[in-house]
Image 1 (cartoon, helix red, strand yellow):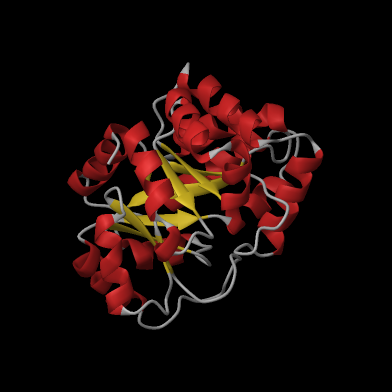
Image 2: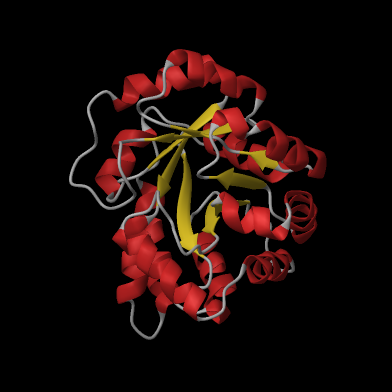
Length: 264
Protein backbone atom coordinates (compact mmCIF):
# COMPACT_ATOMS: atom_id res chain seq x y z
CA UNK A 1 0.00 0.00 0.00
CA UNK A 2 1.24 3.51 -0.76
CA UNK A 3 2.67 5.41 2.17
CA UNK A 4 -0.02 8.08 2.24
CA UNK A 5 -2.87 5.54 2.17
CA UNK A 6 -1.24 3.40 4.85
CA UNK A 7 -0.70 6.41 7.09
CA UNK A 8 -4.28 7.61 6.64
CA UNK A 9 -5.74 4.22 7.60
CA UNK A 10 -3.36 3.85 10.54
CA UNK A 11 -4.22 7.34 11.79
CA UNK A 12 -7.95 6.70 11.66
CA UNK A 13 -7.54 3.40 13.54
CA UNK A 14 -5.50 5.09 16.26
CA UNK A 15 -8.20 7.72 16.62
CA UNK A 16 -10.93 5.09 17.01
CA UNK A 17 -12.80 5.81 13.82
CA UNK A 18 -13.20 4.73 10.22
CA UNK A 19 -11.45 6.65 7.47
CA UNK A 20 -13.71 9.00 5.51
CA UNK A 21 -13.41 8.76 1.72
CA UNK A 22 -15.45 11.32 -0.22
CA UNK A 23 -15.82 10.92 -3.99
CA UNK A 24 -15.37 13.90 -6.30
CA UNK A 25 -15.79 13.94 -10.08
CA UNK A 26 -12.73 15.68 -11.49
CA UNK A 27 -13.74 18.71 -13.54
CA UNK A 28 -17.16 19.13 -11.91
CA UNK A 29 -18.71 21.63 -11.66
CA UNK A 30 -15.75 23.23 -13.49
CA UNK A 31 -12.17 22.03 -14.05
CA UNK A 32 -10.61 25.11 -12.47
CA UNK A 33 -12.43 24.38 -9.19
CA UNK A 34 -11.26 20.79 -8.66
CA UNK A 35 -8.01 21.43 -6.77
CA UNK A 36 -9.73 23.95 -4.48
CA UNK A 37 -12.52 21.45 -3.81
CA UNK A 38 -9.99 18.77 -2.93
CA UNK A 39 -8.50 21.16 -0.38
CA UNK A 40 -12.01 21.84 0.92
CA UNK A 41 -12.58 18.10 1.39
CA UNK A 42 -9.33 17.92 3.33
CA UNK A 43 -10.33 20.84 5.56
CA UNK A 44 -13.64 19.11 6.25
CA UNK A 45 -11.90 15.98 7.51
CA UNK A 46 -11.48 13.68 4.50
CA UNK A 47 -8.80 11.05 5.14
CA UNK A 48 -8.44 10.22 1.45
CA UNK A 49 -10.42 11.02 -1.70
CA UNK A 50 -11.66 9.02 -4.66
CA UNK A 51 -11.11 11.34 -7.62
CA UNK A 52 -13.37 10.23 -10.45
CA UNK A 53 -12.06 10.36 -14.01
CA UNK A 54 -15.10 11.45 -16.07
CA UNK A 55 -16.15 8.90 -18.67
CA UNK A 56 -18.88 8.89 -21.30
CA UNK A 57 -20.33 5.48 -20.32
CA UNK A 58 -20.12 5.21 -16.51
CA UNK A 59 -22.06 1.94 -16.17
CA UNK A 60 -21.56 1.63 -12.40
CA UNK A 61 -22.84 5.14 -11.68
CA UNK A 62 -26.34 6.45 -11.17
CA UNK A 63 -27.84 9.67 -12.61
CA UNK A 64 -26.07 12.09 -10.25
CA UNK A 65 -22.52 11.03 -11.08
CA UNK A 66 -23.45 10.41 -14.72
CA UNK A 67 -24.52 14.03 -15.06
CA UNK A 68 -21.38 15.28 -13.31
CA UNK A 69 -19.23 13.25 -15.73
CA UNK A 70 -21.11 14.61 -18.74
CA UNK A 71 -20.59 18.19 -17.56
CA UNK A 72 -16.92 17.61 -16.79
CA UNK A 73 -16.33 16.07 -20.21
CA UNK A 74 -18.18 18.92 -21.90
CA UNK A 75 -15.72 21.29 -20.20
CA UNK A 76 -12.73 19.43 -21.53
CA UNK A 77 -11.76 17.22 -18.58
CA UNK A 78 -9.60 14.43 -20.00
CA UNK A 79 -7.50 11.82 -18.21
CA UNK A 80 -4.43 13.94 -18.91
CA UNK A 81 -6.18 16.95 -17.37
CA UNK A 82 -7.03 14.92 -14.25
CA UNK A 83 -3.38 13.94 -13.82
CA UNK A 84 -2.45 17.61 -14.08
CA UNK A 85 -4.94 18.38 -11.29
CA UNK A 86 -3.20 15.75 -9.14
CA UNK A 87 0.18 17.36 -9.86
CA UNK A 88 -1.19 20.76 -8.91
CA UNK A 89 -2.61 19.44 -5.63
CA UNK A 90 0.73 17.89 -4.70
CA UNK A 91 2.31 21.35 -4.56
CA UNK A 92 0.16 22.16 -1.54
CA UNK A 93 -1.21 18.93 -0.03
CA UNK A 94 -0.42 15.33 0.92
CA UNK A 95 -4.09 14.29 0.82
CA UNK A 96 -4.16 10.63 -0.34
CA UNK A 97 -5.84 10.23 -3.74
CA UNK A 98 -7.33 7.15 -5.37
CA UNK A 99 -8.16 7.56 -9.05
CA UNK A 100 -11.60 6.07 -9.75
CA UNK A 101 -11.71 5.21 -13.43
CA UNK A 102 -13.20 2.90 -16.02
CA UNK A 103 -10.72 0.95 -18.11
CA UNK A 104 -11.43 2.54 -21.49
CA UNK A 105 -9.68 5.87 -20.76
CA UNK A 106 -6.71 3.98 -19.28
CA UNK A 107 -6.52 1.64 -22.29
CA UNK A 108 -6.65 4.58 -24.72
CA UNK A 109 -3.95 6.39 -22.73
CA UNK A 110 -1.83 3.23 -22.48
CA UNK A 111 -1.75 1.17 -19.29
CA UNK A 112 1.99 1.42 -18.74
CA UNK A 113 2.04 5.13 -19.53
CA UNK A 114 -0.96 5.73 -17.26
CA UNK A 115 0.65 3.91 -14.34
CA UNK A 116 3.90 5.82 -14.71
CA UNK A 117 2.31 9.24 -15.16
CA UNK A 118 -0.28 8.74 -12.40
CA UNK A 119 2.47 7.78 -9.96
CA UNK A 120 4.68 10.67 -11.06
CA UNK A 121 1.77 13.10 -10.66
CA UNK A 122 1.26 11.97 -7.07
CA UNK A 123 -1.67 9.56 -7.14
CA UNK A 124 -1.66 6.85 -4.49
CA UNK A 125 -4.03 4.23 -5.82
CA UNK A 126 -6.30 3.27 -8.69
CA UNK A 127 -9.76 1.74 -8.75
CA UNK A 128 -10.51 0.17 -12.17
CA UNK A 129 -14.26 -0.05 -11.90
CA UNK A 130 -15.11 -2.38 -14.78
CA UNK A 131 -12.11 -4.74 -14.91
CA UNK A 132 -13.09 -8.23 -13.66
CA UNK A 133 -10.74 -10.29 -11.51
CA UNK A 134 -9.92 -12.58 -14.45
CA UNK A 135 -8.49 -9.66 -16.42
CA UNK A 136 -6.85 -7.77 -13.57
CA UNK A 137 -3.38 -9.35 -13.65
CA UNK A 138 -1.80 -7.22 -16.39
CA UNK A 139 -2.97 -3.77 -15.17
CA UNK A 140 -2.25 -4.78 -11.56
CA UNK A 141 1.34 -5.61 -12.55
CA UNK A 142 1.87 -2.22 -14.19
CA UNK A 143 0.33 -0.33 -11.28
CA UNK A 144 2.46 -2.24 -8.78
CA UNK A 145 5.64 -1.55 -10.74
CA UNK A 146 4.83 2.16 -10.62
CA UNK A 147 4.21 2.02 -6.86
CA UNK A 148 0.45 2.50 -7.05
CA UNK A 149 -2.04 0.57 -4.92
CA UNK A 150 -4.74 -1.29 -6.81
CA UNK A 151 -8.10 -1.08 -5.03
CA UNK A 152 -10.30 -3.94 -6.32
CA UNK A 153 -14.09 -3.86 -6.18
CA UNK A 154 -15.98 -6.65 -4.42
CA UNK A 155 -19.64 -7.09 -5.37
CA UNK A 156 -22.36 -8.09 -2.89
CA UNK A 157 -22.85 -11.21 -5.03
CA UNK A 158 -19.17 -12.25 -5.11
CA UNK A 159 -18.61 -15.81 -3.93
CA UNK A 160 -16.04 -16.57 -1.23
CA UNK A 161 -13.89 -18.31 -3.84
CA UNK A 162 -13.90 -15.25 -6.04
CA UNK A 163 -13.15 -12.90 -3.16
CA UNK A 164 -10.15 -15.04 -2.15
CA UNK A 165 -8.56 -14.45 -5.57
CA UNK A 166 -8.17 -10.78 -4.66
CA UNK A 167 -5.51 -11.65 -2.05
CA UNK A 168 -3.01 -11.60 -4.92
CA UNK A 169 -4.33 -8.37 -6.43
CA UNK A 170 -5.06 -5.76 -3.78
CA UNK A 171 -2.67 -3.16 -2.50
CA UNK A 172 -3.91 -3.35 1.09
CA UNK A 173 -7.39 -1.90 0.53
CA UNK A 174 -10.49 -3.32 -1.17
CA UNK A 175 -13.78 -1.61 -1.95
CA UNK A 176 -16.92 -3.50 -0.98
CA UNK A 177 -19.94 -2.39 -2.99
CA UNK A 178 -22.74 -2.17 -0.42
CA UNK A 179 -25.58 -3.10 -2.77
CA UNK A 180 -26.31 -4.36 -6.25
CA UNK A 181 -27.07 -1.71 -8.85
CA UNK A 182 -25.53 1.69 -9.45
CA UNK A 183 -24.33 4.51 -7.24
CA UNK A 184 -26.87 6.91 -5.76
CA UNK A 185 -28.42 8.07 -2.50
CA UNK A 186 -30.51 5.50 -0.60
CA UNK A 187 -32.79 5.73 2.41
CA UNK A 188 -31.40 2.71 4.23
CA UNK A 189 -28.43 0.36 4.31
CA UNK A 190 -28.86 -3.18 2.97
CA UNK A 191 -29.26 -6.07 5.37
CA UNK A 192 -26.21 -8.18 6.11
CA UNK A 193 -23.69 -5.48 5.25
CA UNK A 194 -21.70 -5.86 8.47
CA UNK A 195 -21.35 -9.62 8.01
CA UNK A 196 -20.25 -9.21 4.38
CA UNK A 197 -17.68 -6.61 5.39
CA UNK A 198 -16.16 -8.90 8.02
CA UNK A 199 -16.10 -11.81 5.55
CA UNK A 200 -14.34 -9.77 2.88
CA UNK A 201 -11.75 -8.56 5.39
CA UNK A 202 -11.09 -12.15 6.50
CA UNK A 203 -10.87 -13.60 2.98
CA UNK A 204 -8.67 -10.85 1.50
CA UNK A 205 -6.55 -9.82 4.48
CA UNK A 206 -7.12 -6.21 3.42
CA UNK A 207 -8.72 -3.13 4.94
CA UNK A 208 -12.27 -2.76 3.63
CA UNK A 209 -13.84 0.45 2.35
CA UNK A 210 -17.63 0.32 1.96
CA UNK A 211 -19.51 2.51 -0.50
CA UNK A 212 -22.49 2.85 -2.91
CA UNK A 213 -25.63 4.39 -1.44
CA UNK A 214 -24.15 5.79 1.79
CA UNK A 215 -25.72 9.22 1.94
CA UNK A 216 -26.19 10.61 5.45
CA UNK A 217 -24.18 11.10 8.64
CA UNK A 218 -26.33 8.44 10.31
CA UNK A 219 -25.52 5.91 7.59
CA UNK A 220 -21.84 6.83 7.84
CA UNK A 221 -22.02 6.22 11.61
CA UNK A 222 -23.59 2.78 11.09
CA UNK A 223 -20.98 1.67 8.54
CA UNK A 224 -18.06 3.17 10.46
CA UNK A 225 -18.84 0.81 13.33
CA UNK A 226 -17.54 -2.16 11.30
CA UNK A 227 -15.75 -0.91 8.15
CA UNK A 228 -12.19 0.39 7.87
CA UNK A 229 -13.29 3.21 5.56
CA UNK A 230 -16.59 4.74 4.42
CA UNK A 231 -17.11 6.14 0.92
CA UNK A 232 -19.67 8.89 0.19
CA UNK A 233 -20.15 9.88 -3.44
CA UNK A 234 -23.51 10.82 -4.94
CA UNK A 235 -24.70 12.73 -1.88
CA UNK A 236 -21.61 14.93 -2.04
CA UNK A 237 -21.88 15.45 -5.81
CA UNK A 238 -25.54 16.43 -5.37
CA UNK A 239 -24.58 19.02 -2.76
CA UNK A 240 -21.90 20.35 -5.01
CA UNK A 241 -24.34 20.72 -7.88
CA UNK A 242 -26.72 22.70 -5.70
CA UNK A 243 -24.03 24.84 -4.05
CA UNK A 244 -24.12 28.57 -4.51
CA UNK A 245 -21.33 31.05 -5.08
CA UNK A 246 -18.94 29.38 -2.63
CA UNK A 247 -19.02 25.61 -3.33
CA UNK A 248 -15.79 24.99 -1.39
CA UNK A 249 -17.30 26.32 1.82
CA UNK A 250 -20.42 24.19 1.32
CA UNK A 251 -18.29 21.08 0.70
CA UNK A 252 -16.22 21.70 3.83
CA UNK A 253 -19.34 22.11 5.99
CA UNK A 254 -20.97 18.96 4.64
CA UNK A 255 -17.88 16.76 4.86
CA UNK A 256 -17.31 17.89 8.43
CA UNK A 257 -20.69 16.40 9.40
CA UNK A 258 -19.67 13.11 7.79
CA UNK A 259 -16.24 13.12 9.43
CA UNK A 260 -17.80 13.60 12.85
CA UNK A 261 -19.93 10.51 12.21
CA UNK A 262 -16.94 8.20 11.62
CA UNK A 263 -16.05 8.01 15.33
CA UNK A 264 -16.86 4.59 16.76
